[in-house]
Length: 237
Image (cartoon, rainbow, N blue to C red; front, side, top):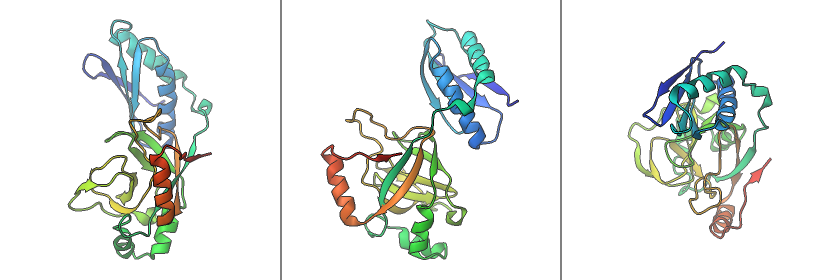
């Protein structure tokens, strides 16, 4: 049985860590634990990561020791097979425009791949959203084809446009907001992963699967305009 430990994170949160390698099995168990813990009296918010769960709580409703005991009991009882089905979200991405996919050709040359093959590989798999972090709405993704493994930029950019789709190391990345970053940019999506004005500001959530769909620049501009007007919805299976 995988062991679990609770650690204080200030006086209003508990950090729950699992002694298990990062992977799909742990991810599913943490999601199941997240669902169980979220329903406990006194729990305000939960924040999952690769191998831990941060639990914010109200100490006037539940004490630290009592919460740790409840988390331990929930961990013993969780059943990942009872999780609801993952959403499959199709994210349109324009690759071949040199303004949007400004590293595409360079990455293809570095990996000794044709541009068509690079795009085919990048769009051929469903990526798993492990958690949201670093910036509002930014997903940590797993599942990238091994052929696309590439060292990150030696000197990170100080500004990368929101919506940029990049790769670095063994990971794929979608920039939810403009920010610094060390990923090679293959293209850009016109969809907003984070929109503070929307009813649901964050598009993705832990457990979602993400599939990239290639579009051309004309389609990118059309979708971007529809997004700005509040008339576009991503395809969710």
